[in-house]
Structures are given as C-alpha cells and as structure tokens.
Image 1 (cartoon, rainbow, N blue to C red):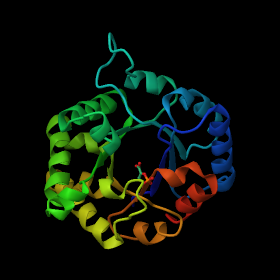
Image 2 (image 1 turned 30 degrees about the vertical axis):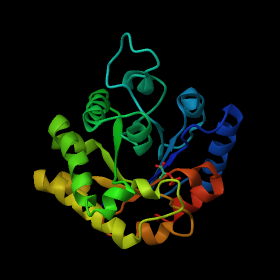
Image 3 (image 1 turned 45 degrees about the vertical axis):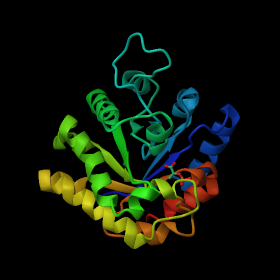
Length: 250
Ligand code: PEP
C-alpha cells in the first residue's frame, strides 16, 4: 500500500563531476524498473545539473532546505518556487543539522513545511531526539512535540502529500543505529499521532528511518511494519552502497 522511498541526502558534498558520476552510478545500478521510489538530494548549486541527468520518473530530485518566504530581500535564501523551477519535487525540512547548527526552531520548521506544501513540493519532515533526551526517557515527547507544531501550523491534510523521517540525532553520522525495534516503536508513535487526526492520512503517510543506515542493516530496519524506507546520509555518496540500500526496500 505504501511504496517504499529511499532518499539520499548528499549534504555539502560533491562537485559537478562527482554529481554526474554519482547519478550515473545510481541510475545504472537501479536499472529501468524498480518497485520503490528513490530521491536524491544534492546541494543547491548542483540541482539543475542533476535535474538534467535524471532519466527515470521514479527518481525524484529533492533539495536540502528552503526559505519560509516566497521571495524578496532574504540574502542567501532559496525559495520553494526556485526549487520547483530547478526541477525539484521534494525538500527536506527540519533536518537535525539545520536545527542544531543553524538554530532552526519548531516554529521555523513549521513555516518551511507550509511553504513547501503551498508551492507543491513534498516536504520530508525530519524529527528526532538527542541522546540526552533519549536517556531521560523523552523520546516520544520530543518527537510528538516536533510533529505537533507542524500539525498545528499546516493541518493534517498537508500530510497527505508529505513524508516524515524519524532520525534519532545520536544515530546520524555516528555509525550507531537504532535497533529495528527501537525505530519501529517511534514510527508507530508518529503514525498513531497522525492517525488520531485522520486515520486515512495516518495510514498512508510514509515514515522513513534515518541514522547510519548501511547496506548490511537496511533490510532488517525496512522490514518493520511502520518503516517505509530510509533517509540516507553517508552511504548515499557511494552509488553501489546506495543502490544496495534501495534494493533492501524491495
Ligand atoms: C542524515 O543526515 O539524514 C543521515 C541519516 O546521515 P547518516 O546516514 O550518515 O547517519
């Protein structure tokens, strides 16, 4: 019912030639038909280049962030309309590196989510707890609060065209992965929260797991009932690893 989605967040990595090489490797590895959706999320300067190289409808181009504003005097910002113009269909919102390194608040994230939905981009809303929050038993409360702020600002109907990514901050880029059971527990909480507003949307929304997913742990994680794929950082920079992770979602 829910088509698996594997998204590769390239972060601030690559060059024009590496973008060409990585996309060629991914597309060669995926072949013509695949029963899942794949998203690549290069840095802003390479979006247009990537858009011209994507050959398959099942391969979606996404951006790593967007401005909450539609346009105007916001130096350094990129609007949702510009992303659409460059060929993007999706955008990350509230990645933990934006929250922790750039001070994005729940309110900022909610405004960006709304801006994405309004312009027709699929927001991939990232939520997740820090290690300290997990150790204090606050995982559920933190994730529910992050989700609630967006629900209040955008409404449940906006989630019909959104994706949620559960990314425990302590698992991002650390080599530590949540166990499949730990991840499933939080995914079920997220789905229940959305379903309590609208059962159909809660049942249909795709919830990805992110945090040190690799070819050797992907299948076990993706096999969980409420896990619909992954948001991949480090391993998405190697075409063979990324394709192997995609195949684990089959
Ligand atoms: C991420 O940055 O969203 C991520 C999950 O990174 P990694 O796979 O490297 O942990």
